[in-house]
Image: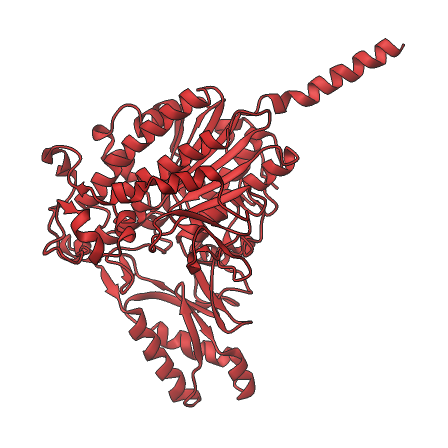
Length: 545
């Protein structure tokens, strides 16, 4: 009888353990900052065989993935990918927002209670404390009783920290100040690991930052992009025109030294090299439990902002990024094994081109002066309610009204909102303005985007939506942040263990990535996940919660 019970116990244990045995040794999450889906189509013939084209041919490629909230910025994008939900639940409503309770601006990963590790500058004072949901990495850590390890890597602090959540072993980002090193914060560690210190000592950032950025391929490859010298593109100090070549060694002193490196495709090389060093040094994928690394390539965003979606600079950056991916995939195949890792790649948002380029194509476009708008609206409110500062802040196309002042002056907040909305809707560059509490005048499509981006404790009182192909000036020549498809449509590719080659053209939401990956890993979805499992990959039908 004991033998029978023992056999049943062993069989039961084997069955329950089977899903865990099927997990990959390593999960690799890759976010390419500001990558539009059309880049993969436009440049496909010029890519090599072992980068983007290898991922598309051998993976599950979703060409019609979209963000379903506003604003479409870096921080909420990374948070939404890895939590499987929108800012309404994970709380990251922008790269920054106005903190009403402390009467000051708040940065998405800023944390004054921690110390920088590897840097004396404020860029080290960061943590995931503002994130209100668990991530894929958090759930994997919980499922493996912390045996699975999780790391985040990026040029940007928010691109390294938010993906791996609150329980990560470490997040590393690049200090583009005087150090030119990868750093972290005391939230994760007391000192940098020896391998990180050694990596920094090699001064790869200086080697990369002293190169000349010229065309990666022969000039005829770049016929898919507009003329090199286009009015409105970013003009670096020391250059007379925004054209190739860019001698970084001569330009870096005038353009922020290491900051210039991050605005070139060589910033992506730096991130890839660091990520590969991390995988090797920490022995990721070499133990029993599944490990996780989130890698965010940020230089694409900086190039996109400076030169626009149809520039030669952005095309060249993606041709070079294709080579980076080829090297990364080769490294993973050799280091981890082709059947031992699961990888996904997407973007935190897309982006539009320089408004002047659209105007040249006879498309109604403009660069919108947000600062002048704020001053004008303040004046309108003062004319109606008195000479006070009724507007405390304007961020993410949202007006934060001075609620305490309104109470003190016995001015109903509803009247302030009504007056502000009336004048905003007179502006020709604004499609519509409304308040978060009633969304008056909004169509269902716009209302859904706005609701998904609203978190009461961090969002403003009144918002506005710009007309198509309009952007706010003063930030960069080209930007993003809207609910239009040029900002929301990004590619999604799953590749590696258990993934069959397929191309899916139906629309999915970016919030579907996390529940799908968790389903593949047989772990709980993140705590606030609201996305749907992508059934073409998992053959599982149903919502994640």
